[in-house]
Amino acid sequence: MTQPVGHLRLGVNIDHVATVRNARGGDTPDPLRAAKIAEAAGADGITAHLREDRRHISDNDIERLMEGLAVPLNFEMAATDEMQKIALRHKPHAVCIVPEKREERTTEGGLEVAREENRLAHFIAPLRDAGCRVSIFIAADIRQIEAAHRIGAQVIELHSGAYCDAHHEGRFEDRDRELEAMREMAGFAHGLGLEVHVGHGLTYETVAPVAAFPEAVELNIGHFLIGEAIFRGLDPAIREMRRLMDEARA
Ligand code: PXP
Image (tube, rainbow, N blue to C red; front, side, top):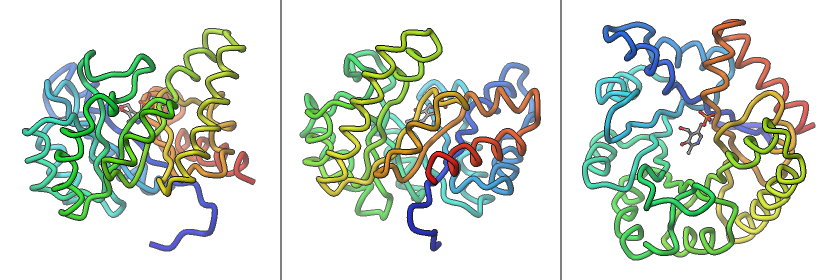
């Protein structure tokens, strides 16, 4: 898949389509249908998080997404044996290792890689060997980024949650500090040879400064887009995000 130089990939996270479906049980709304609409609206990939408690995406959703998608699947998962087995069975294009339990998180909310380097290095090795691109969801923290690099991850996804929260709560000094930390760490990670993604909490209001990071290769956006789809439909909601990303990039 060739992309123009500097193209910023948009990964659409469809977890919360499954959240709405699961509120009633049954089959609707269907995450695969949402994913196909996202593809047609310009998503470069689909992201889905199979949580240990299966609160939204199900095993069957992953099965159907793997079969039905034309764009790559980014499979978000905790670093557990169960999830590793599922990932090795499906061999998605990418796996993104995320924290699910409080003790797996850094103070900023990303994965605590530095403290668990040895275990995580062994955990991701078979995923890499199976051909998955391994991404680690981490805070903009130099210790975590160096550790992600040492364990052999190819990609880091910077956690933009603190930046987005500060913006929407009107704490603009905090927001600007968080943004600056992400910008600096995007450059640092890129310098180590890591591919840089950014995600969590991004909205129309917060996306542009992040999309403008020259080192950013992919943004993963879910909750806001699925919410916005209630008001304007999923296709226009995604196209507007794409437009804002392209504008910021230009
Ligand atoms: N990236 C990662 C690693 C995530 O865990 C999530 C949330 O599942 C997202 C991006 C998307 O975040 P949001 O749904 O807030 O846009």
